[in-house]
Length: 85
Image 1: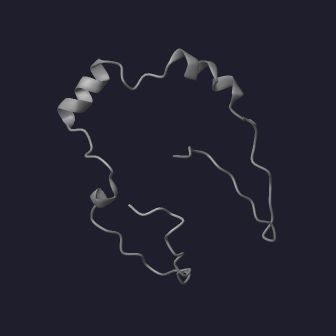
Image 2: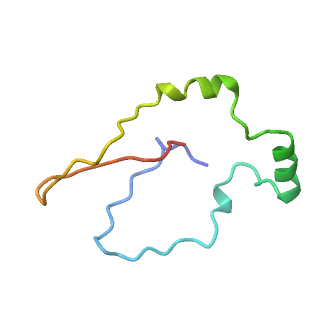
């Protein structure tokens, strides 16, 4: 894979253009995905369980429970729910 700094930015696509996605993204993997047996082994070993240290940091996550702010047609509102990878 190339470094992102080396890649030239593509021109913005026209609004409403239909994108043709590849059938697979396997060429972007740095290692093969685990098969069913390997996943079962990882799960049995507890490989996907968070550590106690990770669980202790949960209260540090930014959280603002409540309704989303009301906006009108002249306002841009952005919200994020997910993770960065």
